[in-house]
Length: 54
Image 1 (tube, rainbow, N blue to C red):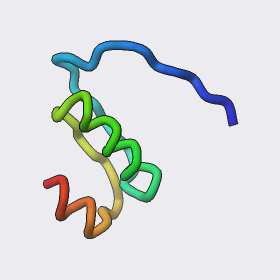
Image 2: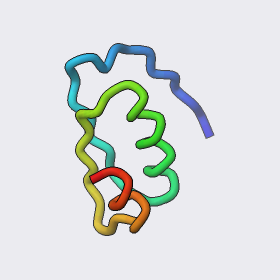
Image 3: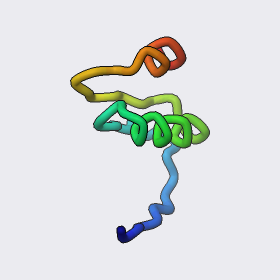
Protein backbone atom coordinates (compact mmCIF):
# COMPACT_ATOMS: atom_id res chain seq x y z
CA UNK A 1 0.00 0.00 0.00
CA UNK A 2 1.26 3.46 -0.86
CA UNK A 3 0.46 6.38 1.42
CA UNK A 4 0.05 9.97 0.31
CA UNK A 5 0.14 12.55 3.10
CA UNK A 6 -2.29 15.37 2.55
CA UNK A 7 -1.22 18.60 4.21
CA UNK A 8 -3.80 21.30 3.64
CA UNK A 9 -6.20 23.37 5.71
CA UNK A 10 -9.77 22.15 6.09
CA UNK A 11 -10.89 25.50 7.47
CA UNK A 12 -14.10 26.50 5.71
CA UNK A 13 -14.02 23.35 3.55
CA UNK A 14 -16.67 20.67 3.12
CA UNK A 15 -15.51 17.05 3.21
CA UNK A 16 -17.12 14.07 1.46
CA UNK A 17 -16.42 10.70 3.11
CA UNK A 18 -17.40 7.74 0.95
CA UNK A 19 -18.07 4.55 2.90
CA UNK A 20 -19.03 4.02 6.53
CA UNK A 21 -17.41 0.70 7.29
CA UNK A 22 -14.58 0.17 9.75
CA UNK A 23 -12.12 2.22 7.69
CA UNK A 24 -14.65 5.00 7.12
CA UNK A 25 -15.32 5.11 10.87
CA UNK A 26 -11.61 5.58 11.60
CA UNK A 27 -11.31 8.29 8.94
CA UNK A 28 -14.37 10.07 10.34
CA UNK A 29 -12.93 10.10 13.86
CA UNK A 30 -9.74 11.72 12.54
CA UNK A 31 -11.57 14.22 10.31
CA UNK A 32 -13.78 15.38 13.19
CA UNK A 33 -10.67 16.78 14.87
CA UNK A 34 -10.33 19.26 12.00
CA UNK A 35 -13.82 19.99 10.65
CA UNK A 36 -17.46 19.29 11.41
CA UNK A 37 -18.67 19.89 7.86
CA UNK A 38 -18.60 16.25 6.72
CA UNK A 39 -21.04 14.50 4.40
CA UNK A 40 -21.01 10.69 4.49
CA UNK A 41 -22.08 8.74 1.41
CA UNK A 42 -22.71 5.04 2.04
CA UNK A 43 -25.08 2.19 1.28
CA UNK A 44 -25.32 1.21 4.94
CA UNK A 45 -24.37 2.97 8.15
CA UNK A 46 -23.22 1.12 11.25
CA UNK A 47 -25.36 1.58 14.34
CA UNK A 48 -22.47 3.11 16.28
CA UNK A 49 -21.71 5.63 13.53
CA UNK A 50 -25.36 6.60 13.23
CA UNK A 51 -25.73 6.92 17.02
CA UNK A 52 -22.54 8.91 17.57
CA UNK A 53 -22.45 11.17 14.51
CA UNK A 54 -25.96 12.17 13.48
